[in-house]
Amino acid sequence: MRRPQQEQQHHHHHHHHHHHHHHNNQHQHHQSHYGSASPTRSRQSHDKDESRLARVKRVLAGSFLGRGRGSTKVFGARLDLIESYQETGVPYVVHRLCSYIEAHGFQSAAVFRLSGGSPRLAERLRTAFERRGDADLESAACPSTAATLLRQYLKELPQPIVPSTLVASLLNLHNNDYSNNHESWIKSTKELLSTLPSSHYHLLGYLAIYLSRYEARHGRSAGVCGVFAPVILPHVPPATTLLRDILAEAHVLFPD
Image (cartoon, helix red, strand yellow):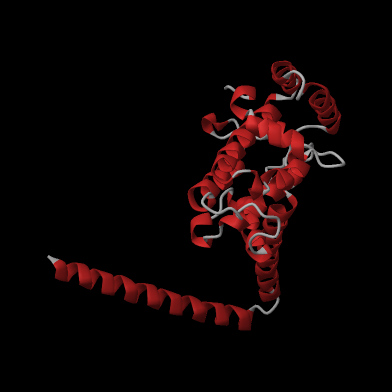
């Protein structure tokens, strides 16, 4: 049963080869007799190559510049325009980075340090997220680079998670109420946070609960608030103490 198939294959191959050879002859023949037709033909194929190249360039440019106007870029895209990932309430890239860091880096007290990881690797992973919407973090095997990427992502949001006017109100409230009337601080802080657009509110809650899990393991000495306050609660001077107290009450402030 097998033999005829082999023969067939062979025959097919031979036929193909012959056909190809014949085609070449024809082409040479065609060229010598109709010199004028040939340049058109090669110009056409040149145009085709050029347009293919232009297309590749366009695609590459798109992945770096956020793919034009109907932008589907990952870094630097507006939070309210990104579909949140399943029931997490946050963009896929955030959930992906956070889950990876938690699985492979939460045991380290240094994973979130500012100088962490490799800038070159960060650039490569970032490009993968832009082009494919995901990156092979497991093969990269560097949680501190993933942490740097998470920080970059938050830093590059066109509108910060918490706008500076709201940070100012939260700070005022914190200065006045935190020590004197803790319950009232929680209630009023919740009210202020509920004025955030839902995409911002969900991301803030997700990060607060996530970072509070990390602090529960490593305490405050791990310096998470110093690292994340500038990108979560932009303010000068940094709202580090406010973030610390938000993390301490994360489950009360974000019960959902």
